[in-house]
Image (cartoon, rainbow, N blue to C red):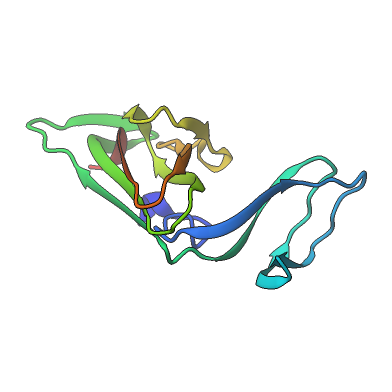
Length: 172
């Protein structure tokens, strides 16, 4: 997919992860190396920690969160007339897309959740007031690469749904 090229294979995955978010507490950078996550004397998982500067925040993925159900669906919005835009000598159509992210906590405890959704184009609206981030790799492309970031707490058995809309240009 031309608009979903990326180096991170999980960038568009609906998979949820148990993860550890922390700031490097050391007065020097943490270099790349193995990390073991232990809780109450029990091993929760192992992963690789990459370079983290002193005081910088990082996230380590531990294991897939199988007790958290996630789903994201997107579909092109119906339209009667398609606007044709010329950019860099090529013709593009402007289309609208509606997406929905849903999460359901199947655990017996509250969880803190970070939801990331990447897309190409211009954001029109999003439920829940997520942070909107312009990603570096999309600054100079016909469709800017963006990321929506929601942070919330989900109670046991609770489900949340967020709808978002954006437009993008596709070759005509």
